[in-house]
Length: 228
Picture (cartoon, one colour):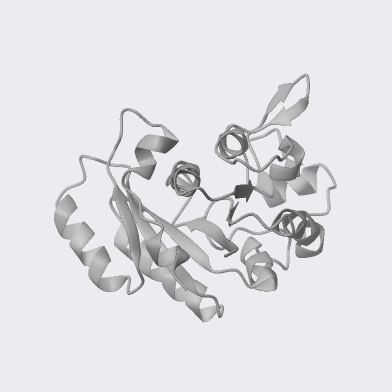
């Protein structure tokens, strides 16, 4: 059993890394070998070892396959701006052709459970003609959709789901991540999402004050992902 998934979100700042770390922790609890890669990361900080991104470091902390930081985050940008703009400013070739070998390298390590975490939402530009979603299409990976539950999430979730499926990819599951605990009619909105997103729900993660991968994992299930 070797499973790999691309993790995308309904927008930026919806908790893709929080959910990814929880899924990885859940897989480790189930005695699986895990790996992860965040091919592109913006908003990094300078360190003695080079640029480091907090999301990529979180993924590194929650994998049990031996990977270097550079394997998990091969392309890092200092400013917290759209990756294609950062790449243009630094004259870096950001394309499917550039990213594909990095992801394939991690996939070839053949961990039991591998996550590839996206940047922002589904249609993040790489350059003038390509999106990050084109990389997922080239890799033919099933997708996990993280829905950031806040005002407007139903529209964002349905549009994202429809676009992924129109791209010819399988949405293997989705997670409701409650990022606005004060959202009006929260339960009603969760019920609406469950009716409209006709793929397996892997869990509903409440707004947590103790944000650890293990705690997040307690709200998630891998069963729909690991079944034959």
